[in-house]
Length: 168
Image (cartoon, rainbow, N blue to C red):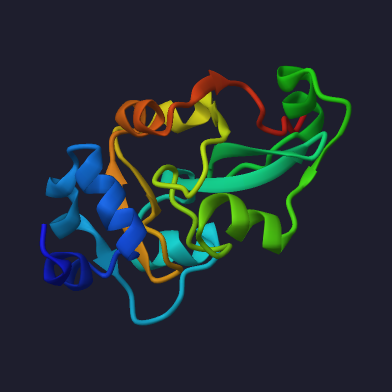
């Protein structure tokens, strides 16, 4: 792929490179770029015109200080206690901004589900499978891409789990 194709798609160059390495370069033309940042799931859903739950959030947590990526649908919150139990960790906290960038190579609001600077453990909430297509960040707060959730979880190397907050 040429640099022009990556630039034209609006994807972060590292993410465009990751797509190519994964044999997913055909996704580049499907990346949507927005004039305004879509840092939250609600902003992304509004810009795309999809349900909030069709947004795939890529969230970094620290489990006993070790980064872990949790993929969650945009309408749900992560239950840290369920993540802690799933990982057998003593303590799970939301990662600080510098740890997110150091681990993934991306800024919060633009973290994609794969194509990160380092390999991390990935947990994917089963709720993502409720849709035929989900939308995830393409490395910047201005870009998203569509993918079927099973394929997305597979490329992320994710383990399907139930870590969504349950509201009774």
